[in-house]
Image (cartoon, rainbow over all chains, first blue to last red; front, top):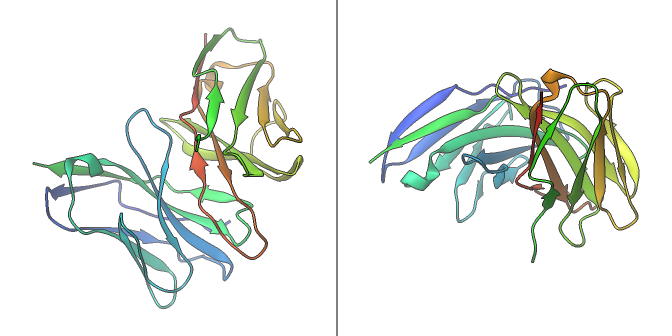
Length: 110
Length: 115
């Protein structure tokens, strides 16, 4: 199974952009790249997903490398409420299986 | 619309007992998957159901089983509980359309403690 690798933790200042990296060098052609985040005492929450092209939504942007072996989640202006564990995940085309990595704990300083 | 509902939210069981957890997906979602979350192992995939059929299974012993009903509601069962089964069990539902890839919506989980 393809796996993802993320830094254990990152720190950001409030109101600044945050770039969360993820490596997935064994990604297959049919795997989508998803990002979820988990706030304390809650289930994971969907953030964004993409296949090959960069994606934007109201929460974040996803930048996917041309060879698809890495991606970056971009939070344009971090707020205190963005402090969470961020998971970079691969889901096959039909969503049959979801592989979670260890995630990156994001700390946001006021 | 209502989100994914998991019941119960908290559960305490004794070693050797068995437990059944329930998950009601978002209306219209036919795919339900289950995950175990522990501090040591993180989030691990248990199994996934679609239209009452198990489509995929993670690397867990046979004591962990599940099923899905015709209304897409799902249950998972753990028999002969061990202390190491103490975890947060999360359920997620998603739409399934051939050739498309949609997001999963998670419930708040059931916190199982085995004593």
